[in-house]
Amino acid sequence: MKRKPKTEYQKKLDTYRQLSSRHVLVLEADMSEDDKRTLFHEAELIRKAGNELTGIMKKRYDQLIRTKHYRELKAAYGKAAEKGDDEARKACADEMAQMQKEYHVTWDYCRTAMIPIGKRYGIHSVFALTRAEDVWRGVEKCLYGDGRTLHFVRQGELPNIRAKQINRTITVKVKDESLYFSHRFREKQMTIRISSPDRFQTEETAAVMHYLEAPEAEDRKAVQTLSGERVCIDTFRPCYVSFICKTIRGKLRVYIHLTIEGHAKPKYNKDGTLRHTYGRGKIGSDIGTQTVAYTSDKEVGLKNLAERGSSILENERKERLIYRAMDRSRRAMNPDNYNENGTIRKGRKQWVESNHYKKLKTRHREMCRINAENRHYAIDEDVNHLRELGDVFITEPKNSKKLQKRAEKTTVNERTGKKNPKKRFGKSIKNRCPGYFQGKVQQKFENTGGIYKEVPFDYRASQYDHTVDDYIKKKLTERMFYLKNGPEVQRDWYSSFLLYCYDLPSQSLDKQMCKDEFGRLYQKEKELLAWIKDNKIKILNSGIKIA
Image 1: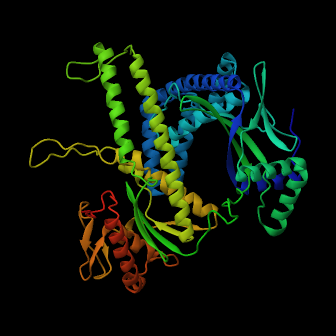
Image 2: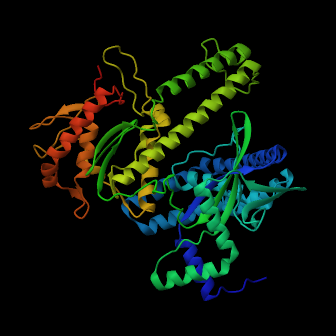
Image 3: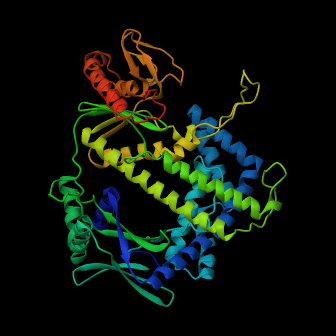
């Protein structure tokens, strides 16, 4: 049966929905313990079905990659792209796509393979399709991105129960001037309400209910505004709903993630003032593996990443101690799974977990969850503070993915004659999340009318000296250094100062601005370093000595 052609209004509505922004409202579900266990069971079935599909697609992908001809095509595609030869690149892409069809590494095969799996596990077709999309996204990352292999979801890590269609499986309804969600799993019908919404959540749900009163009128208003004023207004249309199942302090908790069309409502303090204000001006920032330095018109700063008040070093130490205790228990219970030198024996093994080990595992999981939440909140607070300082954020390109990888070259220590370890910054990046911080900054500035700019790779903010107008290479261990014709400066702060002096129109360093602004901002840097020393704050890898 052929679909009816879309009307002009429907085409304009589709255009509006493509251009409009989205945000996610997080609500805690108010439901019985029995309903929570039902949702946890459903999420576990979705995990198992997704893992089964992952195994099928992984096998197909591995067979494709093992063929020599496909690897040669991939290499030829890369060379053609470097040379700018579009015809050769297109020919390679067409042949690669044909081989992907032959080996069933396609979205159509992934989607159809999930249908019998979903029926066997008894999950709804909408959830099965959504999980198939997640698996295919991983396949695409391996085919076209930097992915190497497909990964399975571990036991205990429950996936989202996500309904990409708002009118199926998880529906949004309004009753007695309150929002609630209806969901059916097999023969069980569940009505899920919101648990104790705060002021922001109340305003958001009220806007959603206002849209649901007259959705067609709100859509027509949005289309007319887009056609006339070329502006996307916020309709607060509920797009789709997800259920997130978590175990917090031993209790089952379910959270509702409601994706809404438009920008989020502003948040207010108790006295009615705006919680977050948006400043104007330029900010230069040097984001390291563990610290962030920034320079703006109003203030300069140097701080550790992902810290809220107290240092996370103590929490990281507690994580390590618990993990070491888990390792001792695991070795004591499974001596046959280890070689004489302490390494894990190869091959299939059966692991026995003692009750003591299970308790330690629960403690470790809870501590990791708390530390992850603290990192998340700390980064959000830092990003909001930076947005209050200005609306133009200038920094260097992201490089966290490169820094966390092991070194490729094998080097020898001249003093001991032993091989140097190949580890680099993996643990620092895991604990401080510089890539996540930079991504959140970009998202915040672009979504609030600001500008996010990454300077070119040849800018070399860490090497330039404005007092002699020359690039001077420094060792990575030099954190405090003297300018050739100037005072001693902190390396990260000085890099942020040079990024602050970046001229957007000319896309280059404004050398005159460096000379004009250095004296004023250097005085602020001296005050900052004195404050750090007086308060005995340990800034990692900064070179600042604290008595």
